Image (cartoon, rainbow, N blue to C red):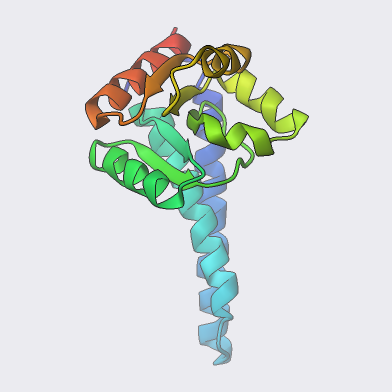
Length: 176
């Protein structure tokens, strides 16, 4: 696997968390089976969701799978873009509002969303060096993208292969 030595402690911690989460779920099922009592589905679903999230982080670290967040005020377009990226092998999610970012998550951002961002969200975006996608090519839009320290500026409609190339360039910035 192509993990460097700096990602090994992170990988080991994630694997340990995955093992403990799965062990907790198994213990709950075993206790319920021995007692003959039903296990609350929401608790098991929570444990499984946590385990799958950790597994995704382990896979991303071990296999260099990019985690991508597509943020667009058009929810349908955001989901279509994320779905296309998933077909290309990216771990992509979509949203119409900014959320806390995962470590090394690549952000694909529609500039239309920036008006609703507070200073903390703008700072997180600047730190993430987002890939900006917008229908605007004017100077003000480009200046806003520069203010956000965008790693790329793509004008809609964006072809999926063009977006994938921008994501790969963004990921290469973090490679040793």
